[in-house]
Each structure stands twice: as C-alpha cells, then as structure tokens.
Length: 158
Image 1 (tube, rainbow, N blue to C red):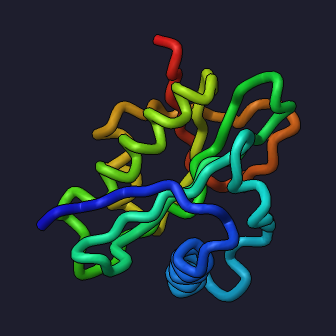
Image 2: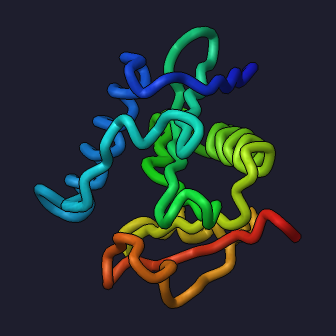
C-alpha cells in the first residue's frame, strides 16, 4: 500500500470533502455543531497555512490542515482536521500526514505547532503522544480554543 501525500489548495474538492468528513465524525462523537470555532478555508493556503491530502491508489485516504493561530510574525500554528478514513486507520496514513505537515511547517519557518482534541478521541490522544506532542494546559494568548479541549504542543526549533 503506497501512501501519496500532497499539499493542495483550499479550493480543491478533496480538501473540502476531507474537512466535511472530519466534521461529520466530530458531530457523531460530540453532538451536532460540535465545532463552533469556524475554520475558514482561506486560512489553509500558504504562507499562513496548508492542507495535506493523502491518497492510496488515487483514492482519498485522509487529510490534515495547518493554520496560523496568532500574529503570523510569531510563527505559531495549529493542526486542524486530521482525519483518516476508518478503513485505513492503523496503516500509517496519519503518521505520514503529520510527518509531511511538520516538514512543511519547519521549512515555512513555523516554530511551534499546537493542536487540541477531545476526551472522546482516545486514539488521537495516544497518537499525538506517540509522535512527541506534549500535553500543555493552554494555547497561546489570543488563540481560539475549546476550554474543555485537551491541548498538545510541539516545538519545531528543537
């Protein structure tokens, strides 16, 4: 199984489909309107963001976004909408997506990446810990977040 990952513009139908799949899963886990922090597609384009699409044999397998969450000069970003098709989980798709995202973020000059997940996503909590994201108690001042969300951080300058 060969996983191909490419950065795609926010206007891509694949990006839109993957964001909506992720939202659908969040709504099933947390209830309707689970994500009241709007994600604006234009935030997902360089230089302040990116969206990565994974495909296997040309078919959508998963995706992940990165966006700036403070003043762009601070070079702080947030991972959004990591989602992998349920039938392809445990095959390394999420690992590959995050690896590509982190490589791009480093090359783009980002210094720190934050993310948050919820307590109804134990597989995500375990995954982020496994790929060296550390649990933190807060996002940077001024960044939108869920008070009840579980927050993680990775320093890219280390």
